[in-house]
Image 1 (tube, rainbow, N blue to C red):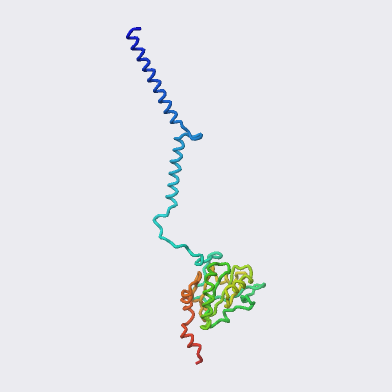
Image 2: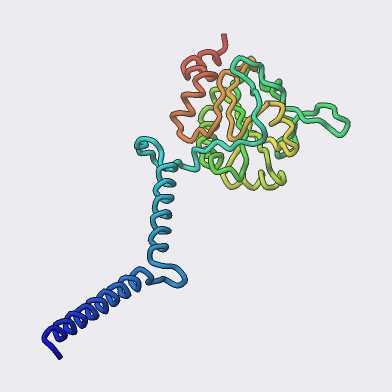
Length: 253
């Protein structure tokens, strides 16, 4: 073999080695590109991940309120006003309070009965300030205000106040009677089993308070519980005269 042939052979070997190296490098590159997660390639998995992240960020943006809301304390269930029935235009301050009547079997109006079966008539309370309280024994805010109503009724009785509780949405009068016994209630309570009085007064929910003066005119309406005694007494000021005035008017002339 000549020197020229030897040089040519070495060049060919070098070229073959280079091609083999290139082939190995290409094979490794293809293997890296073809690595898979189950039936999916890394590239496909990565693309899906990007899409999921983008959707998540979009949902966060859509559901996050604009601006930072002010810190709000948890709402006490005792302060809740329970809506019952459809919205309606209710009675207003200055209206004459409707009589507490229910239809009998023939549709004629008859007085609402108390838990002892005695009729309750606002006409019989003429001249007295009256606090009418629509409530239910199962209603948490009603339960919360009941001790306040009981105590205020007792303390203001000498000043002429008459309290009339009207139980609605109840299964039976016995349930209401048990409730009254549990709380030691001695003011008048009527059982509005049919909801006739509740509807006639166009109530929106419970508890609802009507403060009625001695002439039968509604002077204040409170939609919600009067749990705090101070708030209850402030409301009663709209119908109950000051203690000194009440004492003076009760003296013989």
